[in-house]
Amino acid sequence: MNKKKKIYYVYFRKGRRNGGKFFLWKKDLIIEEEPKCGFNGISVIVNNAEDGSLSDRKLKKIETLLKDFDTSETVVVADSEIAKKLDISDVLFMAIKNEFIKNCDFIFSKIKESVKNYDTAVIVLGSSKWNVKDIYSILTSVKNHYEKIEIVTEYQIPRITNLVELAYDEWGLVLRVYSIRNYHGVKRALAVLLLDKWRRFWERKVIFDAAYLITDENMFVNAGDIIGDKKRRIFSGLKYKSDIEIDDMICTHMTWQKPVLCEKFHVSVIDICEL
Image 1 (cartoon, rainbow, N blue to C red):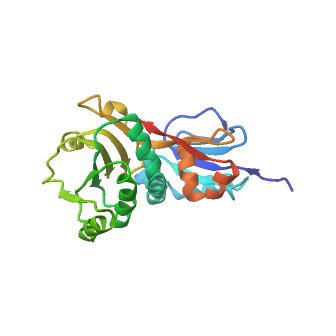
Image 2 (image 1 turned 90 degrees about the vertical axis):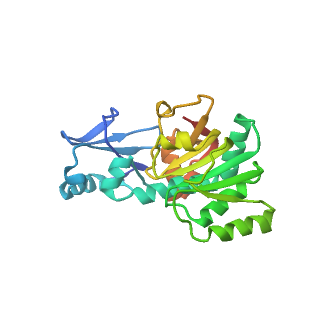
Image 3 (image 1 turned 90 degrees about the horizontal axis):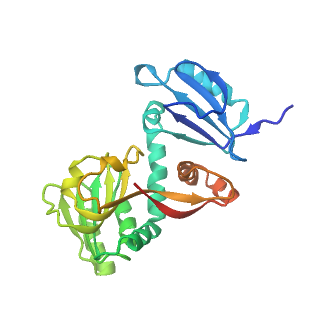
């Protein structure tokens, strides 16, 4: 019996081929192998998915082809559009969220090195996917780098008053919380932008020198979408190093889905990404 070839990721996306060995090539579905110096993967390129979802026939075809491989250590990733069709958006978002919370102190120290300015920060909650426990975890790092911190919310956050009291009791931090309507918009050195999606509205409402941005759909904003003061710097995502070549995006999801692979390939964070 032939030993199955191990693959470490399956990447569902829309777009063009990468030039790998293809197993299936039709107008609306291309499946190709992407050999990457010991970190082999499969790219599933989907176009024209009917009725906003992948048909059972297509999914069955993909499943059948993948049976030819060893998927015991496979990470599944997708672009935002295909993730919705596969109903895995929440799983992919959790990887982004985990990456940020786990590396908060590193991220803020890197931003502080890059943008040396006054010690004020604002955390903007423009997404319902974050709770008071998450904010507390973020605050434990923000307070190490910035003295004056505000929270601006677009959604109701249960127990936010308790967090204000806890911040004062534990750290002596006077934490001010505003609704987005009542926020004064004074310029801050750092803005932590936790948003459902990027909107130009945030350019006008939250003024900052540097920001770290996360959106619900795991989509990075292009630099061309950012208008206004060009001195603003926006960071989103992390850079990784490993024993072999692995895309940063796959490393992000590996740390959440298959952390044992991080040890196997000695994956570690080395920097933050700037838009």
